Length: 321
Image (cartoon, rainbow, N blue to C red; front, top):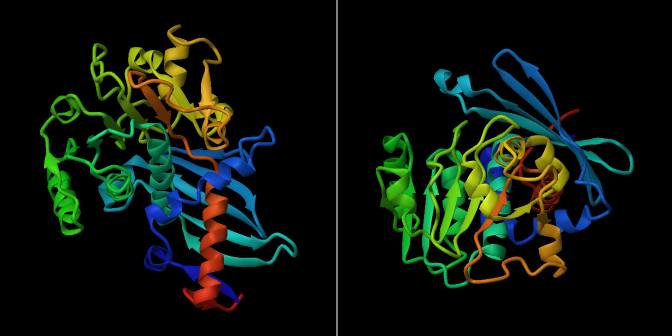
């Protein structure tokens, strides 16, 4: 029998905050010099299909995710996919998971963990830029890591922003809507960008307040970015995987190409912060930047956790196979 875990089932088995508490294990488990397996892509006229194999615990998993910007015009998410879980000892297929929900929750969990590690403990102002699926999951995760005095939200689609603010308020998160990036981020102590932008959201002259933390999540690929080069060059860089960032992150690769960063700039992996080999933030005035790309090891951990919980609770649909 093959377990089918759809979006509703997955949300019933875990949450962003729940995953944020355990996803650090993926980074510690991948400290053998690898980045937790390498992601590959198949390109098509309308987008690309990402292929992400990895292992965790007693399972192997393969996540297949399509990135098609034009899908939204058909009423579909721009990110869609599925994940297959196999037994690591026999190779038997065990489960089929909705990878769209898996990616949404996992991505926000990693950002939540990184922000909690790197943002000042006295940070009280949070700005989230982007009101799509990731905007919702990031608000869910980030809301609980500090006693925020102000949670600001901006989106180029303010209709989406209003709907997301209504959802947030229904869960007890008070939201301030802002009609511009500049207004939302003015004097913000934590900034999280979760957009589909392919060019910087901020002007070249933008400088956040001293001691701010930024999590850049939305842009994927070497030619897309959310942040201007000078801002990136001025920040202390934290990543999931140095090698993955140097393959995939336009936020870093474009400043390298422009000569504002060296070919292999100083970057600290989250595993070093989690293991206490690096202190993370080193001063109250330091600008810290977490550049998110996602690595297969994270997905493997979450797939393993979801499958085990589904077995324990008899969740999901059983399919003859």
